[in-house]
Amino acid sequence: MRRKGIVYVIAGVVIAICVGAFVSLQRGEYGEVSGKVVDELSKDAVRGVRIVLDGKSTIHYMSKSYRLTGIKPGSYTLKASAPNYYEFAKDIYVKRGKNVVDIFMKGKEIPDLKSIIVFTEPKDEGIELEIRLVNSKGEGIVNYPCLPMSLEGRLFMRIGTQEKYIKGDKIFEGPIKLFWDAKAYLAKNKGIIPWEKINVDKRGEKYGILEVTLHTPQGDFKDVCDDVKLFKEK
Image (cartoon, one colour):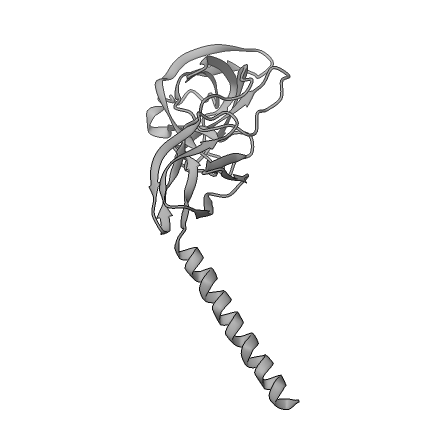
């Protein structure tokens, strides 16, 4: 009985080894396609991106990488699509083993963009602008791709109180440098006006009126901020 048991054990081990070898051999006949998938401008993760290759697909919501396995070697078209982005398509040749193909998604539009609201805050380097994008319902737009934009503005001294004031001398005019804040919830597009570019006189006015125009692929949007602090907060 013991000998039979030993024989069975040996036979089981041999079968397991053979099966493992067969699976490894089969795997060796296929390729794996992987890489990063990001917004081409911000390099952020693309929300809800769907990647398709050889009938296989995967959907990612917040990941910056993807992986498709079990692809027979040969020529294919790798496709990726996501809300508010142009479709990505690239002809590739898949070889056995690992194949790295990075996907850069180009933003198409900001959904239902109707207006902007600008907030300002004094920082050590200058006046920082938060640009919130607003839809037709008056709600802040949260999920959107990074699009090529430019910003320009005019800053005036504010003479009087917030309840009753007039526009004073112009102390800044020109382009405002934009940057992308991936950690922000509403205002991912931000700008900065360096202090050295603001010609503030010494008459005591501490607040300004800022008129801005945001140029986007979907048109120009304007806003006015009448409570811009012209001093660094301690």
